Length: 293
Image (cartoon, rainbow, N blue to C red; front, side, top):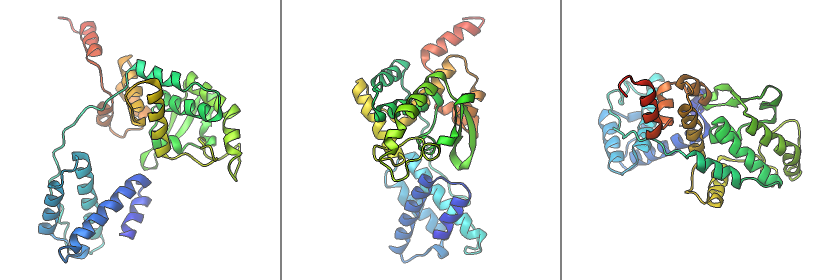
């Protein structure tokens, strides 16, 4: 199992996904142990029985799909190394999940949160920069906390972002995001870095905690919920600001292919799921373009 997880790391799988896979593997091993089975003896009846047991546990479709993906990836790994004679998951069906549009923040909700994050203390300057990067640049939480000082190229109004699977992309910095970053770097980060043993000003993580450590994705979630509460709106997730980034650009005429590049999606199909288009926008588009409207 350790060797399998190391291979996933080499292939570029994120740490968060590897943690999920490790949890899924432990569940499989425990299930096998309860039936006096072992990984090297996995066959099609055992795989089907395990999948059926997962299906009875009431997991969300996305969770069930990931657990089955872990099982398939493991069996391919074992088959490639000759530990299994044949891949027992080759014909294993996956869950049929409902594809739901993600909830997206309205523009007035985004503006309310931005107005709530308007203080001048070091942490407040950092928090405003966080929101400007989440909504102004469409970053994932992990991409945000992975940003280094050297990734910021304010002279050319762009930054380097490390996406899923180690893919890197250049993302433009809007005026508001650039201004918020400048205020944070000039009046916030240096004071936060003083609480760290490595108070570096030219390299290191862009976003720091009060004690000078790099922020975690859990910190980003907590900060977003905090300012939603201050703004008086329903608690949101950091990813909902990414949804809003894509949706609001699409509603203002941005090309879906360009949004795909900005979000760092390998497939435009993924971008289509992220971009929830309001009914009012669809009606305006229909009236503008259809000859019988």
